[in-house]
Image 1 (tube, rainbow, N blue to C red):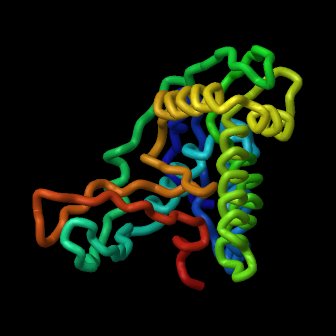
Image 2: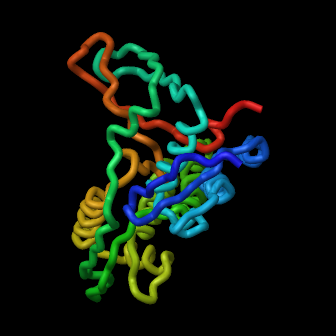
Length: 263
């Protein structure tokens, strides 16, 4: 069994994990997995590769950012060449650019925390002031959000769905994501989701601002954006070939089954 260099979690400098290198069986276990199982497949893949850790052994309990960072860490340690091909239509010049992007460059935007900061505040829910704590999205949250993401995509691509159906599905996904950033004593995620729906719009706006501020405060790992329930890596600035003083950041799909060696 070949081990990879120790992985230090970005969410806490006290957490460290040692992974082994993947073998053919690991590749077969993730091959052809559908998009809606992306996060659960990642959980199984990371769990199987853990040799030793002082973090939870089930990576469902790791932060979304630690999971993506771990996947990147494994990838760069098992591949001599970490270039990927990206093509995009440049918003500055209108042309299609094709670039070989070195995934090692993502390290430039990485951020490591000593520990996740705590946040607590009171918000008005349906006439009652309740204590709220915030938390990062965990692997379990990302797995749950995959279901709501697929509901949204199904509505978006259904010829029978109206604009109202699509808007409702997207709003549900957004509120479910918000609910998973919140913990409240004796309240389940679905109860928190119902409380958010019952909020007055001004109080909801305050809650949104507070969550966004918290997310910036706890930013860790590679620069990551959760968009429509999916975690995407954010590239370093890519210079426009025509207007060299201008650049673009791209959102990069980084799914476990996209970066496996061919069998």
